[in-house]
Length: 341
Image (cartoon, rainbow, N blue to C red):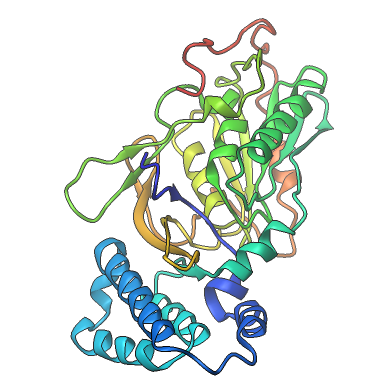
């Protein structure tokens, strides 16, 4: 994967991607009272706008939706006269005009706000004899230590349960972030083959997904639960990286999806750092499962429920019907040299 411009599936929720309520409130605080600008400020704003336009034109899946011949001169003229807040706002609106529902801009002040957000960790519990539930929350960070802590908690929580013959993976309410710790936490269920793919609109070969071995604690053993049945719970708040995680479970034998359609951010964002420190998130790739099936829009469950119906009992009932077979040996693990390859 590229080191400088990392491919991520990331979601900040409707406030950032759709409407900008948080964007407008926090970002306007930064620029309140800074009307006076120098020639150097205007030149820097023009360079920032030109950088953003170039990246969006080159990488956005939906760049063809924009009339660049008309819009680019207008945007550059705004950058020549406006302040940094106005430039950020114009880039934000330009990304919205892509209509991919996923591209957005994160100025430095918003990055700071996100780092102050509490991190929720995975939890596991028994829901019925022989059936465990793993709840995976979203994780909005690229910090390696935090991601490793997330993975460690997931594996430790699952291993702490008594013998489990079947699992429920709960992705409800998971609005995304970075997909890699989620996939790595699910290594026991996913195995070592490519777990999915990023594909572009051109004819370039797809980029395979693998888990990240650097997120495992030293000496970590990965149980091999690839033969166990798995029920996946999803809802309208399952978004972005959580949808990529669900896609990684698509095509897996003995897997069934319960709940309501997901949010529909089934693209991968490519992250670019702009000259002022802002992060430009551009939906640059489609997402494919392990069979190379491409997904667009909300993921549909196998068992559709209403918003008022808890899909967990349905998932448990389905798993209970599959329980009579003996579980795999407790000593079975994935090959240490293969896990997270």
